[in-house]
Length: 374
Image 1 (cartoon, rainbow, N blue to C red):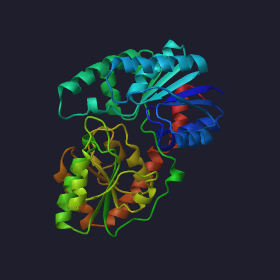
Image 2: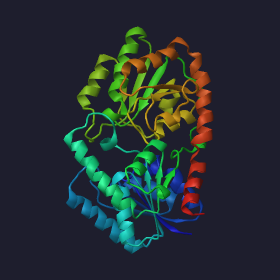
Image 3: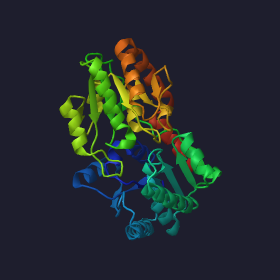
Image 4: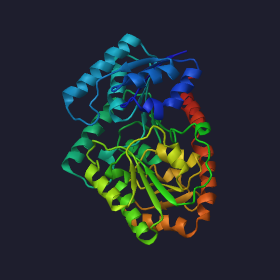
């Protein structure tokens, strides 16, 4: 049995994203310390219930660039690791990957590993503002520094891995292609195809980089020709630089372009109402929402972009379209309206793909094998 510390930037991810890994580690008999900055009493009780681990808090300004705040994060994590003496530290997302790995090195944790789930705003192609260039430059320095002290750095898609290696941010022998976080397939069973009304769904934080505006524009174009088609936008507002303003989202609703569900604890009822899942993102690690849609036997339209293209075999379980192209997105949607039989046929292929590539139990076993943990 090992003491394993897992560091994330949002406490809810222990329920919605890290849950299968935490349960798997607990089943293997490991002692867990779960770090997040924003525990609520309800979340704390829920996570303690299924993990039987220590639930720990630490200070984190997720989107801020204040060096004093980041030093506070580094110091807090270092002292926590010295107090708890974990044998393994596993981090997720940019700031935990940087400061969690550095803190683990300062505390002499024997095994330090990071998971790069996506490159985020600073590395996403598009408008290259001065702030974005500055953030990217700082992140590169921090990644290069922290990953020098990591024993393994996991990537979800080959494009991200190649970019980090080619820019000297991580040494090639430390970089491991994981291929997705995966979903527990038994919790996401295939659902019967939904054909009336034909419904297209996007589940994402409301960020420009997620392709939310392209989804709304494509919905506008399709509804002009096919007014019975339904479009669901599911996701909360955000504080990142690319956040979509609430008034813009509400204007789409008032126009009748789409329906907006700001938050739900369980997306499965909405995926059962979905004919085709849509993610027009500019870049991802490998999106969890798409993996969930695949598991529930939903065809997928997504972009031919890093991370997104890993979830679709074009013409088999869905269609790939260029990023930032609402016209191509609308045309792909119309193919399902013109031939509804694609919904069932491609949905079956999606479930097959989920079973082959995105079974969380297989991926978690491989992650621990790479780390030498049984």
